Image (cartoon, rainbow, N blue to C red; front, side):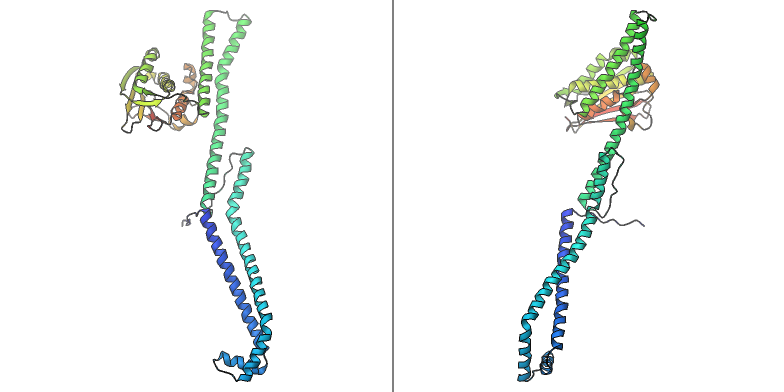
Length: 390
């Protein structure tokens, strides 16, 4: 049987309810205490009355009229006890009020501790987070107030984000070292061999070394682009552009690369106007074309599409007949150095940063990047730039 969960109340509402209950409880306890003591005083006084006064008091209680002498004796006796009795009643009100206030305070302390217990857990978890333990989490409780529950959820989301960021940072550091190690080793070995006279210092070897330097330059530039994206400085200047003309220009400049990969290019470039950083969008489209040349050349076909949707958002789509994306394509957006085929990527000079750079550029424009496999085979990458991002 599922445990029933009551809705969390706002802290202000819960505080008002508890305060009202404590006030009513305090007044009720004071009333009961004073009423009990008043009855006790009445019984004590009646027990101490003279016989004739006691008989007169009893007759008054039975709605009978006693004789004048007995009534006079009763009033005289009560008048002598009026002042000390009033003092005792006032003291009983004070003592009962203090006792009820103390009792309600104890209840209030218990309730307050229950309310702040999640905050104490949050403080302890925050200390763990401060010391570098990003695995700490705070258990949610259905007894917490709405604000505390929201704070717990926010803290857990923050801890999860920091843990993910730490894993990505650790992975990226290892990936950067791995990416730089190979070209640096080749450069160091070749240069040392030429200095030692093992290799001749001819143009062919120097040209090969220059290719390695260019590869290092691409890695550094891609890392710089990602760092600008993290600092939200990737998109600097927006202007009104027709994305169809921009894609057409990128295809024209990339024609030698596409021809070398033997890709037959089809286009369906419909006018699509938006406000964006033109060089960055061009960089993103070129990175997708390079990715297609690197992985989908065997398919021999590439299609580029642009269109403006009814909501004034734009779409840039690139389709191919390559091997497509593997399962778990979320890794493309999560892992900076994602590779579809690590061995072939290095053979063709890929850094593993291309799709991450595209993702960073699209997100910096307020859009989104979608990856999908075509039913007839191949991959499809779509850039969505919304009207809001424009």
